[in-house]
Length: 301
Ligand SMILES: C[S@@+](CC[C@H](N)C(=O)[O-])C[C@H]1O[C@@H](n2cnc3c(N)ncnc32)[C@H](O)[C@@H]1O
Image (cartoon, rainbow, N blue to C red; front, top):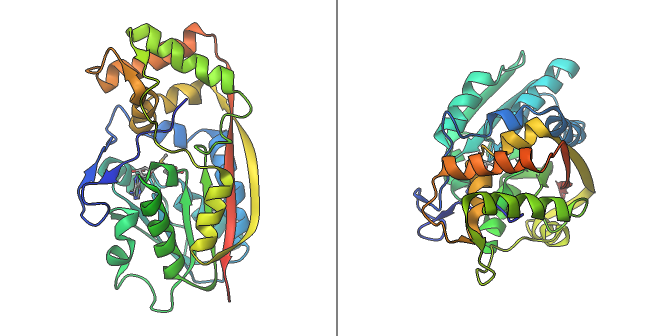
């Protein structure tokens, strides 16, 4: 299965107009996948590692916060451990942020704010909102692969490194590295082929797919952002049938799967999503393993 279409920027990253954008909506969004227990557990475990480094009254910035999963997990840990903090979630998607605002319950002593914008604009968006000495924690979960272009990925990571104070921590994870399909490459390939067959399209082998990076490449980009890797792992997440159907209602995922299809170019998002969900049923998929690559890194103190 191919990587999702990565929203980019018309001017290479400096304006606020996303290109190749697959916005979320009431019907097509990340809400139900983000509530999947296996997905949440994978994120919770990584957030918990970072949380151990945080002082009381910490400052955290979550880039590509989506529907607010990472701030929600940080608040849950604050409730459990009695720490207080300020959390800012940044994301360009209006629908996702509205959902995040509605569904994130700040823990006692915590403030949570959601700011609309891209990771490329991070420092401008946060000017005057974060302490001059930097923040204690920055995160980008399940999203770096959606940021188009290697240089732009690097610049977002570099900006995250710059806003971090010395000794501060960083977490990243992604299910779109070259390791993602290593537990079930054939099954993911069959799902895509079945969905294409159901709509009467075929794969264009000439299309140069967007680059899928290796875990090592991501580790290198993170190191180049001035961060030292403290923990790195590959985590197998078992995606249930219900979660599979949920991810097939997430626009960036749907558009990514169909990114190299020819023969039926004018297919709507709804038709593509329906084909994927029908393919899951027709292949009798009960569960699919997918590998998340994760890193916890720290800025030199
Ligand atoms: C798969 S969702 C993950 C959301 C959240 N981090 C989570 O794990 O639940 C990816 C998110 O990346 C966001 N995104 C895409 N391009 C972005 C960019 N250039 N800057 C910041 N966020 C971006 C999307 O809007 C989407 O909400």
